[in-house]
Image 1 (spheres, rainbow, N blue to C red):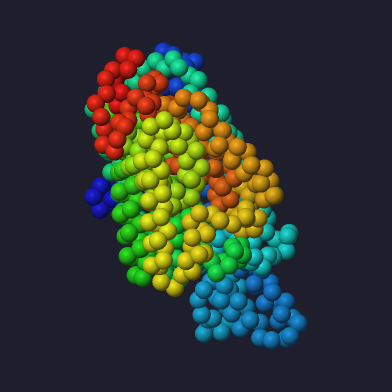
Image 2: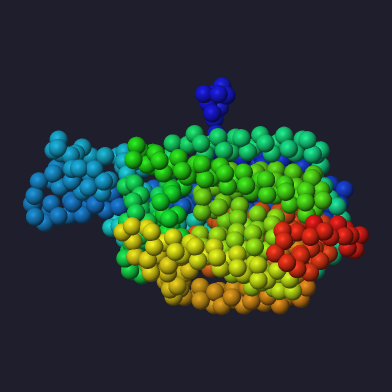
Length: 534
């Protein structure tokens, strides 16, 4: 962007949190109804940002501290070995750090003694070491500065996840109570539709430009380019010792696409090299298209289902304005499910299409699978067969496609796609890898399963409003047991949450009233309870 806009610099994530929070208050806060639920929702949205910043800062400093600690441990081990064997200290000292950094040993002989700042620079230039690699790397003495920095960064990251869990818990309660809020006065944004569209388009252009011009990528293992063998996943279920990018259940082909960091507090990942360019380009194209799909889907829901273009434009602009969107713009495993879920809601009058979209989201990241009891209950009285065929056909097609991945085990990829393994206790990330005993994931999982199946019978009559709020609630609840960064995947529920916050009363939008009996795309509907069923 600096080539187009004179002296343009990307906004620091912390600075953008302050600016976007003020913008959200100015555009959406109802100063005339100070104690309204809308204002509470806006405060909860703003409170998500500090936890995200703390978690990201702790994660980035932890990776840097782990690399530095590993380098220091190797130096100490080399020095100890030299004292024991009496070998040449220069050769031993130069070989270990060079090997750790992924480069050949120095051919110039002795390595001069480095200062801590020099070690930090070399650590930042080494390949990315993930959380599991950091845990397995040799550690220096507990009293060393590197070890203290590592422990401090772990505490910071844990605090960030605890913050996200706390605010996520409040959001879960808010979304589950939403079906009981019958009185929903129209509270539009404090700006005209034209102004909202202008701000939204401007934000979209700048966010996507950051993705497109980024020269960095982020992988969770090594700097080698992806291959079909890497897409095949681990060769056994000892996932804590295998180098995989996309940890946890999901579609194997997502392993081929890297993430594109656009905002970083410490470092931005690894520079894109020639062998990565095709994959980085694919990631950028997918990211831009998915964000465009989210924005257009939100505006379409506002226009066709809410009957209010201004509300649709306001929700889309608010989504682009969130600090999370700016910080996680280039992570396709965040935004692809968001786009699919938004368009599944938009196409709810076409059960076959909604089923295909929900099936695609389930096949890609697995977790939307637990939305099926809610959606089956919504279509129970009409449209169930079409919806079920859409889900089943999509999942079957994706499962068959796994057979065409070369050098891969079909059954292992199928296991990964549907999460057919016991709850993992090793190699976890996020809060479950930062001190919380993974055993406690089991009761959390049990509570989550109970919630998912309870939504099949409560509320007894499902409408579009309950479909929105309860779908968002399920995706919020997945964050608590997600073992690979749960709490950070806010795109899975934020678009649906924003639509829930701004939605009108949708009690008349039930499947029996808005769906046709046959396989036709739609049927003519009249006015139900004073509202047009759409």
